[in-house]
Amino acid sequence: MRRRAYRWTTRQLTRLVFGEYRALADIGMTGMPNASRVWFLVAGFMARLAFLRVVRCEWINFQRIPKGAVIIASNHVSSADPAMMASAMYPRSPRYMAKVELFQKEPVIGYLFALSGAFPVRRGAGDRLAIREAERLLGEGAAVGMFPEGHRSDTGAMIQAHSGTALLALRSQAPVVAVGITGSERMRAGWRALFARTRVRMTASRPFVVQPAGRRITRDDIDRAHTTIMRAIAEQLPPAYRGVYAHLVDDVDQRTDSEPNATETPTPQEPGA
Image (cartoon, rainbow, N blue to C red; front, top):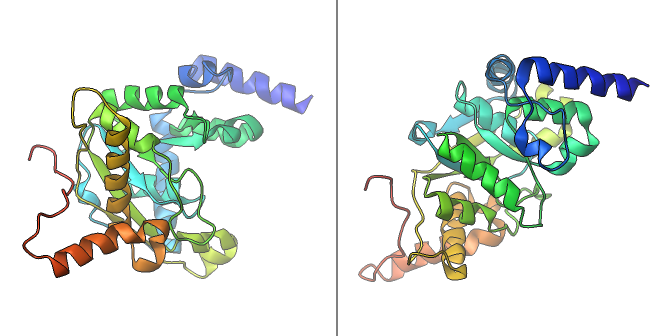
């Protein structure tokens, strides 16, 4: 009875106030709301205040994030990462991919996620609908947040990532900003992390664009773009967090030290360069 009342209430609220989010309706999840700017400004302000005063977040080089369409690609070590990233960009509201299970199994949380601008992705399934929705949002000038690894790292070190972010960057030609997150793994301690004043550092790279070698995007293009993006993320992290991508940074360092006259590995190009 309570679930029916909840569903009726949220559907009426969606219909009368927010409007239905088409991307969720297309996968059979009707009655979910469009992102609300007012909701984000209120909730985002409270979250930013908490992260600054209680958790001690440090946001480095976030002024590098360009206006307009941009992909924010980051490592993933805590459930709090999307909220901390949104707080760092406040009052701008980034749109994040969130696992579809959040919308299906956690109706209250899922509703708030949709209200905050999240959209669903089926992890590990090559979700074309999620990629198309991300392309649509970028076409409207939004900032789209991506966690290429697709799952939180249990150890804090980077784990093997998926290529969806690289494909989106190639198809949209939107600039990419890589962000390295450290310290948020301690947020798993829950309220104890708040009392301990956990220190979290988020460092942003310069924006860059990945481009295909020819007119059509090939598997090699995706692999190269994937390597470029994951290297850029690893470069924003200390060695202990680089995990399976440590060799990408090590290879560049060794080539620079031992072969100063050799052609350098192509580095990400800033938009307009």
